[in-house]
Length: 205
Image (tube, rainbow, N blue to C red; front, side, top):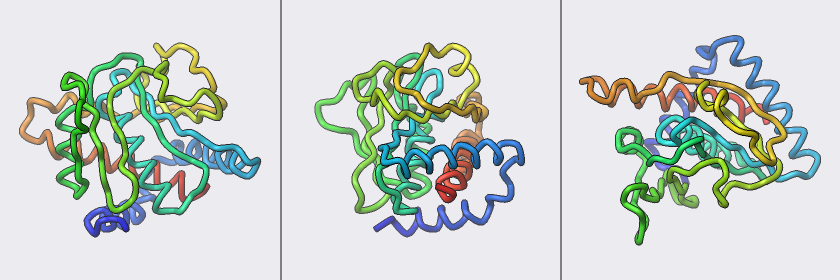
């Protein structure tokens, strides 16, 4: 069961699919077609959201995808995030999720410089979030469908082993608002923008 606040968020997201840029929609449709073909071929698809520091946008992508997979009852597909550098899941991103109705918990015996954050959106399994690079052992090495959420990561990223398809869908970095009064709003809007594209794509799978 998905929390009522998250259900309301999803309904709002689905109503705003028309606000997605036309060219980005075309990319998302093609990517969804490739995912569908892989699933139909019996493959287990791993979505990998990548940005430079794996601290904000890529985590948002991973979480949105995990939620969409449950919501649309998709099988044999999961989501991950990674970066070209290791930092931490930024507290402002976590606070934005809490504001939207998600629940989070820091895992026990965790590295406080890069804590493992367990994100919950209902009674389904927790989403495990922490900053990692693309070579991390948690990342599968085949059937990877890579989504770049920042252009820097795409330009500076070495070859990702196991990547069969990739797509570039950069979003402005909410980090630029970290010292501003509207910081929470910027983070929430960034998460919603990523969610709209993720849910649109997954609704076509």
